[in-house]
Length: 335
Image 1 (cartoon, one colour):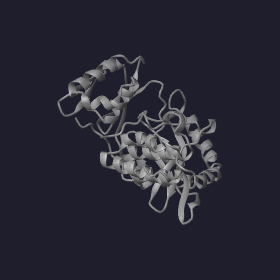
Image 2 (cartoon, one colour):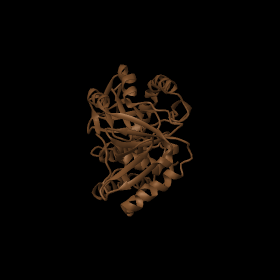
Image 3 (tube, one colour):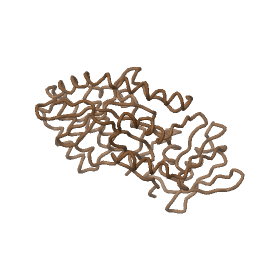
Image 4 (cartoon, one colour):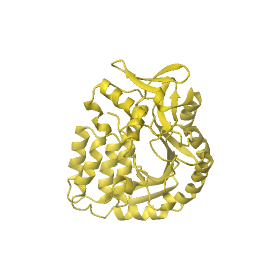
């Protein structure tokens, strides 16, 4: 079964994304979880809602993955299951939701996601409009997440003649797959590679959508924009050191292990060869990873660019969630 998905934008013009978001037909249906039932016709999944009247909606991938994420189901096992088994698992999970009510978000007639009563939405359109004044150079977006690219704010050369631009990314999710957060972004002009550098510390802590008002989330963005502006001097120094710092023993294998889920077999072999160089510097290894990220879709590209950022600041010793601040590991990688 190939699950449905919505429109995807990759570093698109902000106005194109805004036009799309404003043209969507959105509906939120609040109901008890036991009034929901998933069925399949052999090619698609459908959600039936018996809430005063019976309505049926085709199901998007985000709805499926969100419900599976709710109960920590290993999503990589999905390919081993029949359509009927998958529908049965989803229905079992719907009956085990403890919230008295859930919100089903419907977009253009498709069941987009399912959220708990404690979820505080902040729409992608609001985030774009609030950040418009800082200068947005591009917007990437799929059903799972939003990623805003600022204009380049600072330029530096870790290696002579190899210019990099420093800016920042802002992330959000309307569908419950990641927190509202901000990270540094490094763009390498020579090959158009990029990496996401998520700093540690309380001042960089992502803002969860749960148990907080939308007004407080808007205030978070204003506060964090000032935090990121103060970090570029340190990031320049980290980049300069990475150009001469040797990649640690065994790190190539660890990097490949973390990158492999986002890559096909050919790309994984290519990255393995690049990381096999015993004289590799951290900067060269980072560029090998981001080179493979460049041709990927929105979600797998972010996974690799965030991995590269953790490599840069030496954060691979911990788990992904510990080292990235707001881990992308919970985001499914489409086949």
